[in-house]
Image (cartoon, rainbow, N blue to C red; front, side, top):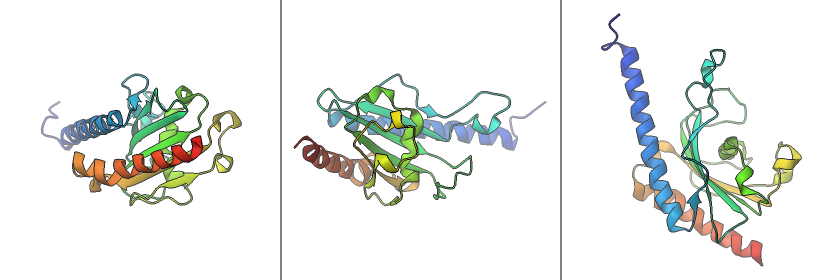
Length: 192
């Protein structure tokens, strides 16, 4: 069976290209996180909420990609950077029509290493969500998570549509510089 010139081969090639571009984006973000004293936590796995099960083909390709970051200086903080591609499960809370890039932080977290990958998609659940870079705040008491998962004081994030992040410079100036400025201000208030 000859499939090399088929549309399927083209689609697979495009998926691989998208994956490579997402990898470059996450690596660019990682440089900026490191400049701000945050290192990647865990292994290099970035694909979130995927499955290889025959009975779950909708989860074969990830819905999102993310990376968590911690710091020796900011010990009660866990940060994340994520690329959310779609709403494959038709979740009512997801109201975006295009892929987004998001950065977020959990402040006052008792054990940052215990966060699950799915939490890096929280921006789409925020009541005041936007995709223009404004910071969104989520009160842990208003989150429908198990009590043991609500062990943080503040959860904030910002986001842009992926298509608006056209270079590393845009990533830094539009998304991550305002993100880190907000974090530092919030952290200083938290410590006082």
